[in-house]
Image (cartoon, rainbow, N blue to C red):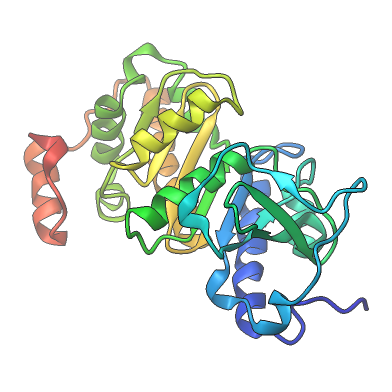
Length: 278
């Protein structure tokens, strides 16, 4: 079996292994059709001196690639990123063929691929790195960013009533107590914007200041978390609430949901913020 940089680095292997585990869940849930979705994880703290000395890998005659802007908080940072055109189901099986470890160059405007193979990162890398730059700059401990296509949440964004952070959050929180407990910031909403654009990246940064999970209208979600499982879990909890809403409608009635008083009781029980319940 081919040796990888993970073989003698158990902490790094565990971190990237969790990314692979989440990638498998995304495929199983139908949230990652073809090569849909992407992820990045800040692995800077897991990079040893031997890795730091590895040369940049060449791809199409180049070793350095532009991010598109300077991200000053990424000085000295390293990331694991899903590869462009790579399927989540393939990443789940072999994360170092489905993704790559990259390092940010000293100018904070370019990156290099380092290990294991020259797998060009996701085309959404600039947006992911902008999020990572924001997280570091704001003092957050979050290290993971995850973009996927949760079916029921995307479906809700096709209904005009739910095209607001407030209505989405209130409705999803009201479906089941666990949504309040495990997604206490609710769900942010961004009106339809073309994928991969600066406008979408800027809108996401604005919303992520208030929410850990943001829904792009008619597209998918972006989540941040302490690790990849945390980002997945918050997305999963919110989508479960959307599934309950859909199931209630299938019985022929608009679901009642928990009352504000009931939800405030849950928030008191778990010492959760109450800003969006008035």
